[in-house]
Amino acid sequence: MLSFVCLEKDLLKQIALGDEVAFTSLFNSYRNKIYSIAFELTESSAVAEEIVQDVFLKIWTKRASMGEITHFQAYLFTTGPGVFISCGQ
Image (cartoon, rainbow, N blue to C red):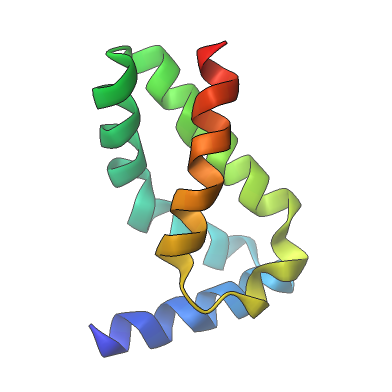
């Protein structure tokens, strides 16, 4: 677990610098989890896919601040609800 946390912090620092490979790695680590939660809440694969895209688009557009995040899962699941709400409207 500790090594994943360290790796994740390194990925976030690289993402803050605009590293697309690091972003892809982070995306691949979390997309299924976000999709599963979104699908469970919406019961729609299309909406769940849209939510995954919106969450990661938000992360990419705010990438400059990613290096400051110490608990990415907490950040992710505070970012996610706003996306869930906007997609549900």
